[in-house]
Image 1 (tube, helix red, strand yellow):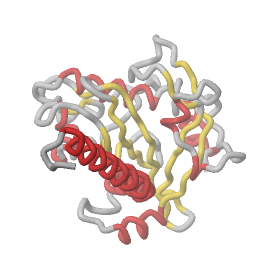
Image 2 (cartoon, helix red, strand yellow):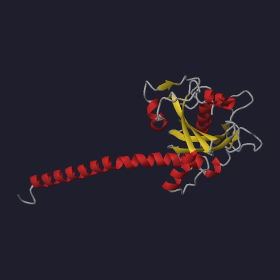
Image 3 (cartoon, helix red, strand yellow):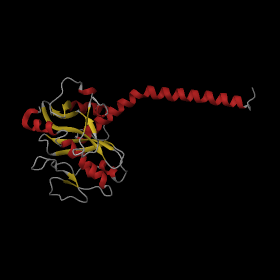
Image 4 (cartoon, helix red, strand yellow):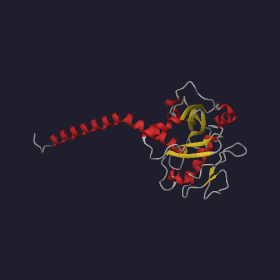
Length: 257
């Protein structure tokens, strides 16, 4: 067959496509376990960073060592009780939120985070020093301007004083809403209070610079009002009665440990 023939060109192109497809498919399948492991490790790293236990440069070994200070528990968000008949390490709140048997439709009047559905249960992470709980980490997520923002809110054991906040996955605009990753902005959160005198979440990201004396106001994000509003709604929803509120009540009354 001549090298200039159309048939030979098509045969060579077909063989090349098949070989490339096999290589790409093999790579995708064989590397998926490593990708999944890295995703889990990245979430743990961000949790630990938000809790102030590791730095951004932490190695895999440092992350795994620091994570030994974390105790995971599963909470029924309706009752605030711990769930003991499920494996907390295998629970995936994102998948559960999409499962009609495992999710909960959030009433529109309560949906401050604009997520419509959430899992019935959620992990809560306890930062331990021996048997003593030093702080509590809550997973949170809600809509920003362009994306669903996934992160962690760390509270002191009074479950009212903020120790840290961080978002590990979002698609907000770099330089605008993406500033929720900015360490300087995150540094204004520690010490702020979640709940007002009425026991309702009062913390908020305002437009402009917050009064330093305010216990509840956080500096705004320049040019990113909708993302800022999304952060406020996200935090207020997850700290409210329709989410972690029942657990927070029981924990602060001494029934959480």
